[in-house]
Image 1 (cartoon, rainbow, N blue to C red):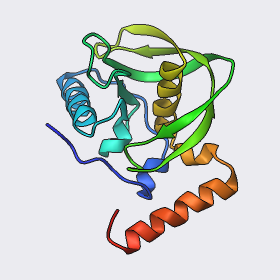
Image 2 (image 1 turned 90 degrees about the vertical axis):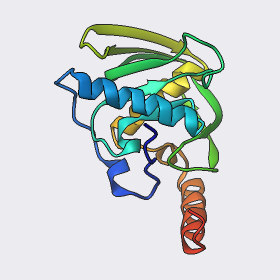
Image 3 (image 1 turned 180 degrees about the vertical axis):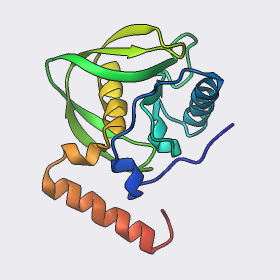
Length: 169
């Protein structure tokens, strides 16, 4: 089931999510819905708070569904190691149509759990590192806007307010 995506400035997007403690069918259904929602958007990553659920769950597929075997579901993910830096254009399904250049680590190592509660470890570089950091930020109530300079952040927020006033957001 495709779920509505929560848009900024919804306050829930800036709340820290609670850890998942129950690994049941409801969690699996949510992950399935999130993947379907992400692909329909279309996007390459989605965090539970973006569909209105305040838990530490993310889904990702750096190929946007173009290649089989790349989708990933991570429960309670946390970045445990970062190396290097990269600056690239970044967007967000909760900030549709807006992008900005954001600095992120070049590579990361993430510890998480799968949908059955088993420990997993993921390493990613370049786009995958960016994607992991972006989605895990959502779980901590952080949007990519917070990684921008005050001036760039203010310009984007003004643009959003104008879109809201015009009924375009």
